[in-house]
Image 1 (cartoon, rainbow, N blue to C red):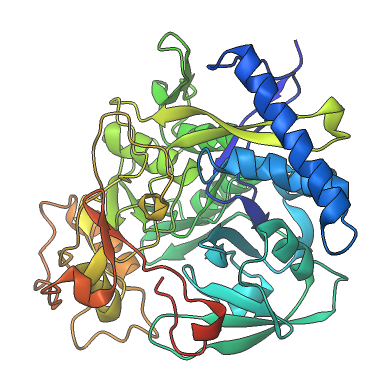
Image 2 (cartoon, rainbow, N blue to C red):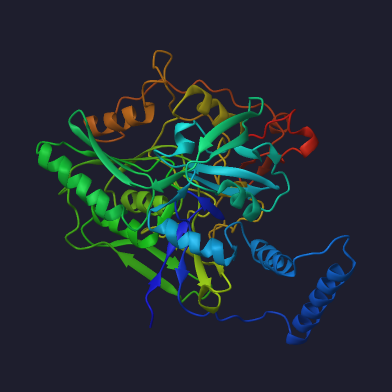
Length: 481
């Protein structure tokens, strides 16, 4: 049996970290409808294709039409399923190796608009100040509204060193241009440093090198600082990646036991992934994990495992809520691309499915006063629950509704120079637990009196962003993040 690789993440297409899974085995399909009905619908598809070929106002590319039809069929299932063309499939495999050309952003499509899930550390997009939740409305002055995501992604790719201008729409601001230069993105996904007496490990993605890089960073920290008192693991804005790397990262801090399980359509189809029995390289030193709404999938697996196993306290904001696994199935060995298909949900060691709901921190901390107010206004973040066709949480749970977060930076805290979430994480380490840590004054955030005033629509206990503006309105209204 050929080796199987699983990856997990948030986006449909990536100019950043890998976010899918692939297996080198054929897909086995079963039809819920009678075969006669399926054949009838396939005949209808052929009739439509023939009519378009013969009567459309100009000549069409039949291959592109069929690829678009396949993609439309699969993307109707959920936001993370889709069709990968041969070029996109090749790009995906390069991205998971952690070195490729691009801008360093992970994107998806929402209401016909390209939306940024997360910029990657130390990339052109991150340096230019691009933010999670921003909409890309145009490239080099050409509108992207209504353009298929695959076509938009192709426009962002090009020769390394060539300049590209993205038009960004962000809530509360007029649309603005950001000029970037494409680079070869050599992702260093794990870096370490000291914060006083405590170690700090930043893990920005889960690619093939992540566990190796994290292990090296931890060895260096311990060698240079033998009296290190604890560790902050920063998983904020980490969009996910390889499942085996999430398990390996968890194994660095756990001695055996379950990290995550995944369950498919058949209740008996359960796979469990355990940590190594001699894994905890910190030998029990206290830990804090930082998360936010950009922490997704593989990052949520690590955070959920360390929380459930009582190995670390979680500080920050509720995570993205991407609790499903995508299997990328090559078609004819990849010659005809691949299908990216949602095949399972994953569960934390205590049996929690966090699909749509996310992982809630032990200490909820907003990074800025503006973020606290946004969370109070309309559940703040672009999350899995924002997608209209997102897979439901298996237990029927819902994401927490709009609320004022427990803590936000006080008036004297310089949010431009300081990292308030990190500061509070270090406080938890210093005092030994969340319960023992002196609490800050409650966040000054005013709950919205009526969600309808914001244009948001209530969904799953939270709110979904208002519909993206039409092309004619794009200069008048910036979509919310």
